[in-house]
Image 1 (cartoon, helix red, strand yellow):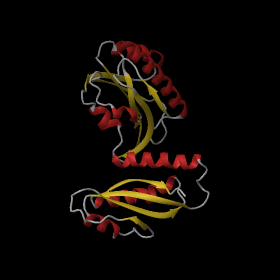
Image 2 (image 1 turned 60 degrees about the horizontal axis):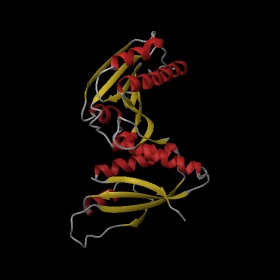
Image 3 (image 1 turned 90 degrees about the horizontal axis):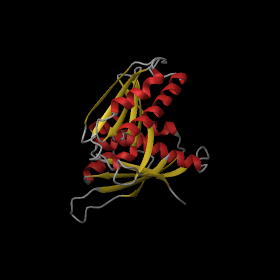
Length: 261
């Protein structure tokens, strides 16, 4: 859910836009929950310190992820941290990641004053958990962008899931085939042609193909169309291969949308 908020830490209104996604690291899942909305204003000069709290989880499943009971405990812990660190040091939660029995929380704050008091008070009800905390200078918000924020392909996956959610909300999922347009940019016509000749690029209608009459170096847009029955597995089976094939040919898969009749 996107929520407009403003506070003393930020000089402008932001839209908090929380998203959860999962990546694989050495064959194990890493679950990341991040406020994507902060990217529109980051790095925030007034919040140049990152506070990191690492917690060892007690109840795990076979993948190293928390059980339901542990997840509930961690949520209570997060709520306490958000409240107390905001009060003690003006910190704002940027996100967290979970892997191999560890959860790390990331906050950004204007300074390090009061952060230890805030963490200690927050963690008092959770004395059964081992934890470590630190605060350090991070003026470029490198921890936010390198640890929490999704890469281009994961961002594309997120946008595709949201697109599907809108289709589902409109009652269009599992209601028969839909016409879908796919939008691409390429730096030159030759790379676009190589993309179109790639294995698997069959069954598409070319809706828009640029010409090179201007002679000006610029991105070349391509629009393809086909009829599909989209669902969530379709993202990995069809959209991700399109994304990677475009990237191999120096192109960018910008996104897709249902054709409005």
